[in-house]
Length: 115
Image (cartoon, rainbow, N blue to C red; front, side):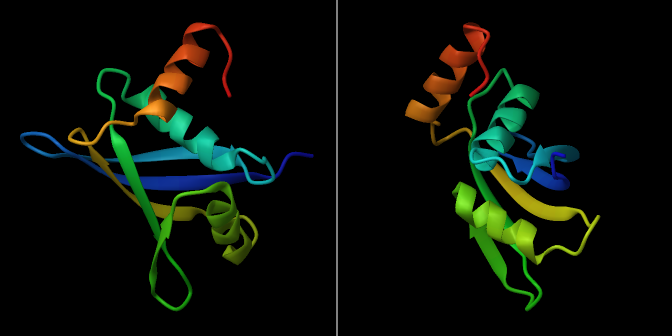
């Protein structure tokens, strides 16, 4: 059985005026590409503009922890109690390009493959 975890994203996106919204996703916490999977979901929500995302969550000691890899996101899942939702603060910036990752995801999406 796949271990699906809810991730609630409190998003602030660059712009004039800045856009703020909340998104709720389910991700496979045991996936070896869970971080990339979450980025792909964000990219799918905001197809028109390539944002660079900064993601953080607050741990049990009330520290804000930055997430930038699969291992860091999986560590966040490990701290969750069963059936709890991981709340993440996500800031998207248009001023910084996704670069290679954005182009790779766009190419895979156009070919019908999701990485």
